[in-house]
Image (cartoon, rainbow, N blue to C red; front, side, top):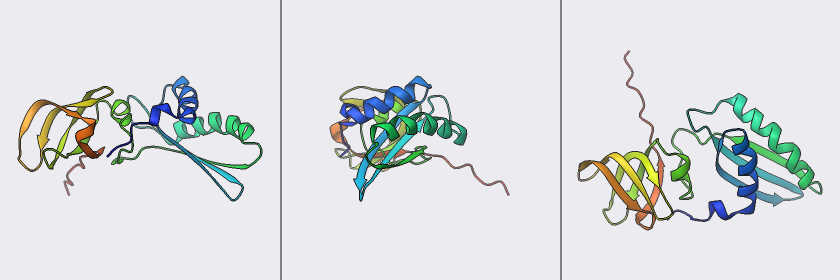
Length: 164
């Protein structure tokens, strides 16, 4: 099952304030301490398209100085990256981050994968439009799935056919 605590993390909230000020979306923030080094990973996305390496560099240059001061007692290792084309969701907050994108979810009650475009999400469920259930081949305009019914989810990317 997916976690439901991403937005409650104080680290996530603090980094999200910085990231959203530049018009980006915070997907995930993790940190750990190992042998005197503080490792921090920030995954960010653009609301209206693909994030570029220049965007990631801009975010790095914003985040690193702040956290190098906050974690002044340790070396800071910061990674700022994109979510990737087929990101596996780790938290339900990602449904709101990736609104408008194609997603593949596994429904426990239906015992099958459902592919559709995220059109809406709230604290309890996600709504997919133009969906298709892989096993039963059921198709429809809209389906609402409670988070408690979703075992896993990931971005679905349709590779273009090679016209060679």
